[in-house]
Image 1 (tube, rainbow, N blue to C red):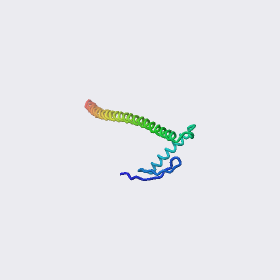
Image 2 (cartoon, rainbow, N blue to C red):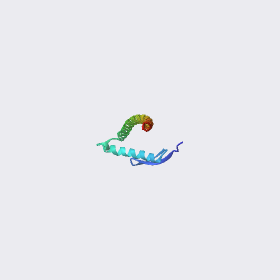
Image 3 (cartoon, rainbow, N blue to C red):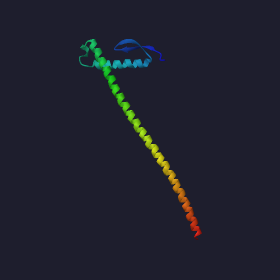
Image 4 (cartoon, one colour):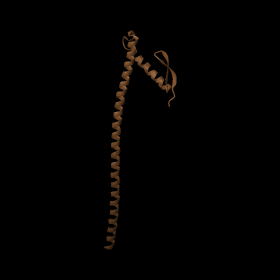
Length: 130
């Protein structure tokens, strides 16, 4: 079971004590929120908005980031599935080609054996005809 740790994080200039399994992760979350706050503060007229509307903008930006990440995750998962399908096909082709090569090598050995036998018979017949 995960141990819960409390850590202090700085969000928007205020210190908050939050609990979670990983201190570093919680610091990263706080840094992400601060980055989003910094981005929306650049919106013209932001400073004149009331605090409720400012929170709404932050929430909308966080939700936007979340949904964009979900879309990217789905795209990457689809790409991964297609790559795995392609890889499976390549492995199948490799095995098939290896089997054909093995069969060709076996046939080559058989032909070489027949050739050597015929050559030996030819040499024998040549000696007998002298």
